[in-house]
Image (tube, rainbow, N blue to C red; front, side):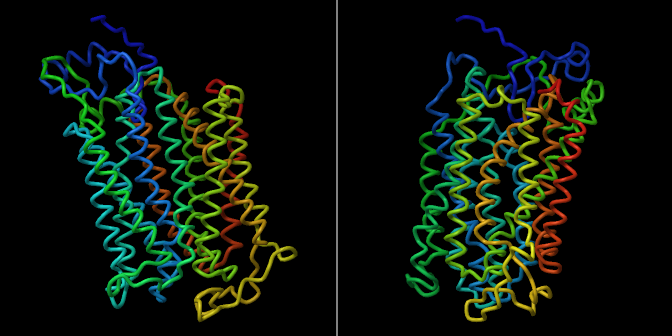
Length: 507
């Protein structure tokens, strides 16, 4: 068999961004010398080509897991308000923050599990089983006579825990793909996620003709607009488990050797080693901090909209739960379709090489900033917030919101069209361009710690934002929240423009 020569510059782990550079002699001769390790390699070094069958199966598993989240998410607030009138916007924000915190913790737990025990199937199956438990609890939530919002929060946490297990699929894709096919393999994963954004709303839309309380299947278990997607989502869990068991395969474990091995980032020794290398590396730390600030600012403002969108529809415009679900389905489906065109421009039209990433990101954050300018509730062109309707529990309740009297909301058609266009355009383009710039700034070092730091910062923002957005909206209304978010994004845009020239070597 031909002995392969690994190109160190191309051999990059897409999760931890670890390059295939050889270990320095002094490191291998010190703490790592003569360590007997159980060498486990995700990659099949004897493979001559990418295993596209496993790539497509992995993308399908990712799609089935993601479609559950998109189908459930858009009806969370309308359903909570329907079955528990005591639920408040602040509580919904806290519930969302708790679920995101659980997601962040279990991403790490599943990653350590997969790495330590050299398995891919069992973490994925466990995630699907947790999702099944969440679905059954969600479907039987009306058995609880009072305090149903607390059980719903518990279900949200379980859903996000189950949604954290597919994070290990990125390493699996890296293992079954050759370096030359790596970008196309990950594009298949991105495409599956985008398709879930389109198909999830379609599933929800199909059942909007069955209003609550719908059809009683057995006492306290009903089939209606809010529960129907859960039935569909639960069926996808069984399909996913079957595909994982019979379609995927565990990657081979190598025999034990005396060969020194670089310790993992999950080990204290490995973490210290990587931090030491980072300190010695010639990294432009100013640009690193700029990337962190830009990422956190964009995540915070985008997540605040995602948290409040169904609340805005029901409170600002007085739309019913079914109307909110139907309109949210159109919004997510439309932005998903637009995102597919943007992703396609990167994949097939090579947008990232035609236009430098620093300019693509500047366009994305500038467009997102304009969203707050165009959709601001101006008194001259806005509409009055809807009066409270106690029958449907919609509109602005003056007992909960002190700003209801004289409150102004953006024009609904302008608001909705801007949401579809801006999210569809900016979410994929900003993510791709910033990730590209950030990885180039870090260079050829082992990027695991620095990439992990960026993920941790993003997760912290995801945990804080729902509570921040819900409390500001409840206490002050939409105008102050839009001003604050617009100020954050304006600061990011100005900072990026000031540093634009320094980003040139990395574009």
